[in-house]
Picture 1 (cartoon, rainbow, N blue to C red):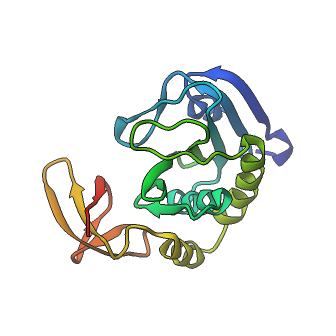
Picture 2: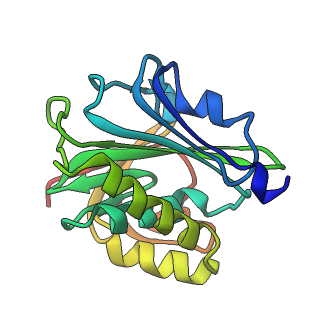
Picture 3: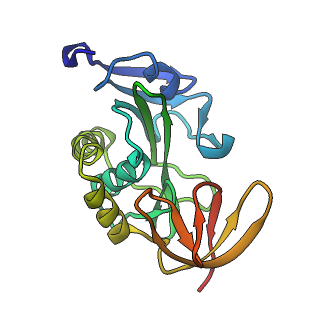
Length: 207
C-alpha cells in the first residue's frame, strides 16, 4: 500500500481503535477519546472514562518482536521512569499505567496502546501528561522501534524491564508455576528458571 494512503483518524467514541485500524493501510493511526469495547490480552477488557486516556492503534508492518518494540517505544515516550512488565504492560512505580495489544496477519500488524492519563482503575497508575504531546512522542518512538534491528529491541527491552531478575508466577492454560525471571530469548519469550514461556499471564511476586 502506498504511504500516501496512510491516514490519521481521530474519533470521539468507538468500540475499539483496533477494529477501525484493521482496515486501514500501513502507516495509519487511529486515536479515540473513548472506547466502549476496548480490549487487552487474553480477552481482558480495557476501560477508561471518556477523555482520560491515550487510546491509539498503529498500522505497522508485521514484526515478531513488535509487542516488545512497542513497549520500548511507549516507555520512552512516557518518560517518568516507566518500566516494562513482560509481555506487554507499562508500569509506573510498580503499578500498571498502560498496556499493549498486537493483532497481526501476514500483511500487517495492528498495535494498540492504551495509557492512563488522568484516571486509573483501582491499583493502577496514571501518567498525568497532555495527551497530544504524549501521542506526538509516541508516534516518533513507534516509528523508530518498530523498524529497529531485533538485537537493539531486545537489548533496550532488557534495560527497561521490571520483570527480569524478579520472582514471578506464570499462569498457563493448564498449569501455574513460580520461579525467577532470568531473561528473554531472541524470540522475546520469557525464561523462568530455564523454562521458556511464550504466552500466559505473569504476576510479579514480592521479593
